[in-house]
Image (cartoon, rainbow, N blue to C red; front, side, top):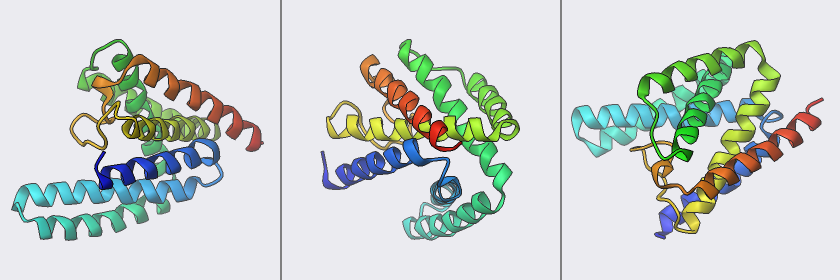
Length: 189
């Protein structure tokens, strides 16, 4: 594995474990980091595709990252909705991946919206569930990347490597997510 990709995988493992087991306690920080990443990726991607200038893409990515972090941390309920929606999209993609396929886009969008709404209505339960399973996703993705099981990261086919992931990897994600959920829910009382 190349140096940069190895570093990304190790960071994914570390941040994933922290989010999996402590996500509820540090949820506002997670919102800020998620907004930073999503805002940066979206702005950088759009500007680069419009201008084909790497410099402008990087500048737009940095500005978008700061705006995304501010919005996610400042607009708490929107952040809760988006984290829930992200969890819903990852979950349906993982279930289809386990069956060896890819879900239709409309199904991912509908389930993401439904889970996002549920996250706002049942905040504690959904924050614990979302952070434990999203954290376990990144931790297991990082481990699988270090072992050479999947390629990471890839914006083409998010979640990373899902189509090529063996069932044992997806089961590991689910088991770690359950353990993280139990630990978080007990400590969040």
